[in-house]
Length: 266
Image 1: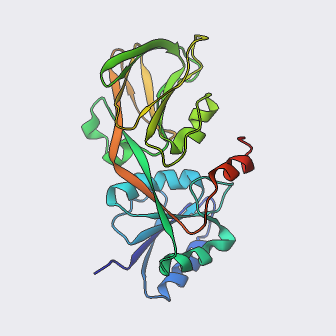
Image 2: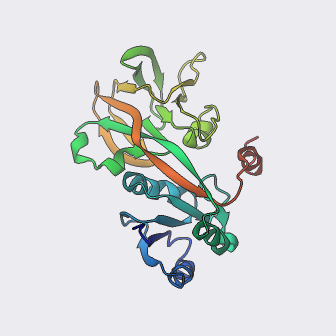
């Protein structure tokens, strides 16, 4: 029997008194669904789907848990124009009507998984990236060796190395001069941050390729913007395509290029 449990994850910075979350809870409860409201810092488990109230940052956070449980996410934007959310707040209930009627599509987005240090003490969710894995320390040049499928590709000095998914190509990767990739693509982009070389350029590789980054000095590891740990000199971070995908529900036809124009990225 199909689950009728729906989770609502609310970013309280954007819905301070959970007024909108409770409005959605009432809407779904009246239609026979069992509803649980979760705060942003709480984990989610199995559900029919998850309603995410916030912006792209909220979607990123929730994706790490939703992907492992294979729970689709419907994003209702309470912040600025986002790439991951489906509709604005004033269209949220209409989007839910479409979901319940089966009038929606779903997008599978690849995720990355990082292995470094004592990986077994870092939960799987905290090693998954929907946007990117970044190795480095801002404002500090460090020597890096980059291996693709365990073959040395390049050595360079830079503030950091970004390994990004297509979803994350419009985030930190773009700010660092990396290319924009189509969100549903099966690719990974490697972009140096402030490289100490005029010849250093980003590389686009296949999603099935593995990336190993070796830092010659102490370096930090950040995943989707959150610091996850450090690696000492000579140790590496192995980044590979995760078997888990983020599933994003769509009730509207999203024009990727129109969104880029609205965000003034084109």
